[in-house]
Amino acid sequence: MKTRYVFSTPDLSVARTAMQAARDAGIADRDVSLVAREDIELQRIPDHLMQGRNDFYPAALRGGACGGGTGLLLGLIAVVVPPLGVTLAGAAAMTVAGAVFGCWIGELVGFEVPDAVSRKFKAEIAAGRILVVIDGSKEQLATATATIAQAGATPLPFHTHTVLT
Image (tube, rainbow, N blue to C red):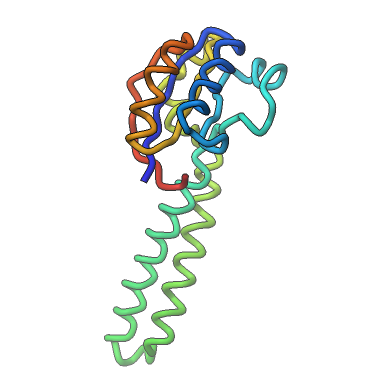
């Protein structure tokens, strides 16, 4: 499992230097992304480096898990109640239907909810600073943190495990 660290930089040139320092420390390109104010993103940051600004994928996973659990519970209850005539195959179908429905609803909701980094550092982003988001193993991040800080980036208090990277 990887851990996510966030660094704040005053401008794009420092952000690029910090990104290069992360790469030199062994962090892969796909594990480095940037978050900035929309006007800065649109003008200066290439699309492949921008991090998604919504909670789409985590919300879809949570919705799928909750919907699947609910479908399973309702399916098993329906199997136990004889007048309903639901078989185990019916319970499995209810589980799948619940997971699909929950995933769909989670995606709809997650599309409108800002991601955790954007929510926590809203003031940094509004001030025009560019956030460098790094995902890596504990060993990689221990090496990279010092070199990224030397490049002019300020570490921010955000260290969380990532599931989708």
